[in-house]
Image 1 (spheres, each protein chain N blue to C red):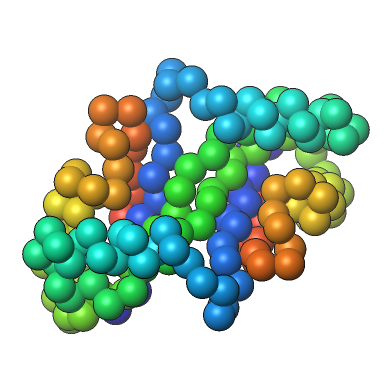
Image 2: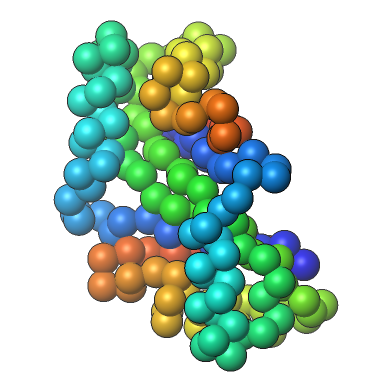
Length: 78
Length: 78
């Protein structure tokens, strides 16, 4: 089974990567780009059929490894 | 208008980050994780209403800055 975890910075947390992208795009002439935010997308291949059980496992993986829950949020798509 | 760009490694390109995550998860006891791949998700806030025009602009941004098209693929969601 394939699952996707999208990890993004929480609202209000400074995003230097996003700022750098925004600045670079405007210097390339894309002045209509008002803001950019960068996150991670982690695609996992997991053995098992029980979606709910796997969702709970992935939540535990996010809490312990995949996301820094102090400054990041995560969304799980199965 | 908000747009999302998902940048991921092409099939066959080595993904050391993914390998490291897979290894770390199995050492945490999640042995059912068979593979992991890591990509970027870039959320852009762009001025404008014409979706097709903006999609073309974002494609140009990907080709020139947001993705390394030699080893990465990108998907645009508007």
